[in-house]
Length: 497
Image (tube, rainbow, N blue to C red):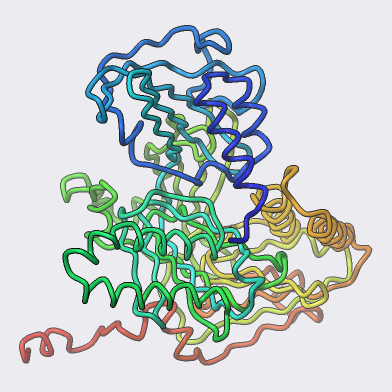
């Protein structure tokens, strides 16, 4: 199995918790930003049941004091909480150590370690404490070389894994969450199938033989004699497959964001708002009022208020702007959604950037818009960064921050020098474009036709900007959900059935 430094640093972190020294946890786990998902479980330990909580002084330092619930992982944070628990192996009392912390470039986690001094039973787990994303995500990877087997994969415990060529599927909640590689996922599946083979050979030899043949097929996938497809479908939106070509587009990897259905919401423990909770304000009221609703800060998870307002953009259409300002940590975020219907034709806007004043153009990027910069061989897919109403400079700055500051696999001491250098070079080119020292073209392609770039010469044509309307392809309509949408005579069709 191809292993990365993430796995070795993760094991060091768990060993540190087992030996109850919190400073060793900080030293071992801080070096691995992605260690949070390696063995993510669904509780404080499958081999332990909490009985009494004793939050006191840990062996490695003083107990938790005032401060955030999930402090940053470091040498000065408080020690783990001690919980007396029942050992499910010998039914005597053991000790569970819980560490609530936040790993840089990843999310909040709970590290738990159970130890029974009576029988020696040990159980270690890492559980995500981050929030469920607003949309689910589906990653489709075409594995065609052995380099693809070394891609980093974050798989949440609620994610479904599938290999269509073998008709093989791992249902949700049948495995713990993990930070591994593509090859590691295959080895994990093989180990799971081989676990009960001795019993099967004794009870049902024919079934054991078929499983043995299937295990051989799984092992041959690692030779990559023929390409195969790996699909990870996570309704919580917390899974991830590495793009080794970032910031360029990965032709072998397809990322699809989707709205969860009622069954998936129920599986994740979410509940939709009832009809009584739904606001029934008229459109005229919405136009003249700034609405507020309660939410949580995406950075610190503290209670916050989101403001929402309908806005008419000149020479364009009506949009909905939502802005959140957290009073606890100061984080600010905004999002824009189209207030109109899907346009009959898609829109492609091409702007030639020749002057620093172009950076001041107002820009509306919808969730269905892709952004391309041909001179940098860069493409930002739809759904990334969400909807935004900003300036051209603001969009380029957000793109740079997303790629360089928020990338979990190209930041910190676990990044490869050549990849970090490539990212730094890309960031410098973006800075030159923003400063007006490098000419470039930016292309906004929106299949729904809901994106906009300000014309500085309006109502006259802009000599540096070209706006094209185009017919959507079948794939474009499929991504927008239009192929299965019927708006005429649907009642008659239902009666015929």
